[in-house]
Image (tube, rainbow, N blue to C red):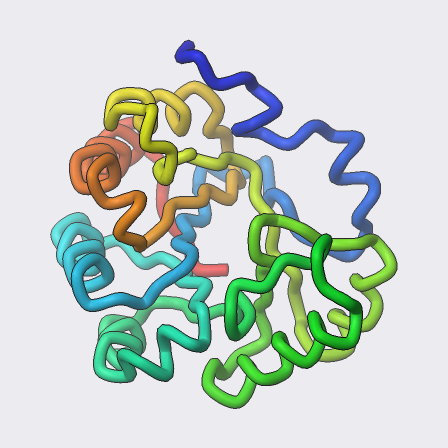
Length: 208
């Protein structure tokens, strides 16, 4: 167990109860996980992540920031060409807790013009319970997580990130990584290790 507290990796059940209508974990009866990536797509990281996933024959769901989609449409197209899932992660990675409701939903709606599909993940995991009903009118699923890798933490090592996942993964887990420059120094090594370990343990990987 590394220095990260359990609640920073796996949200407590009480928190999940506060947000009915959101998905934190899949079915517990089957040995599979949902692998997800936030904050891309960007040229220096996303293609490398795709190479790793393809090497292991794994599909994942990418929650994209629409401003990155605007800047790097060719990288966004790579996700679709490689059969990856796509989700909305807002236009500007907006924080719900420090913006007005109208600004927040305008940002999410602006992202819909560039990101197709019916999956949404709130940036930073920030969401007011009373936003859920309105979001569910626009999206089929609001996706949270069961395991947060913390790959973006500069004070962690790739070993820490690997252990964050392996110590808490369970059937149906929704695992969060980030295809970002901040995460890449740890993700580059930790991701293939996670994929190999979970595959060896008999886990399959499914799109949301």
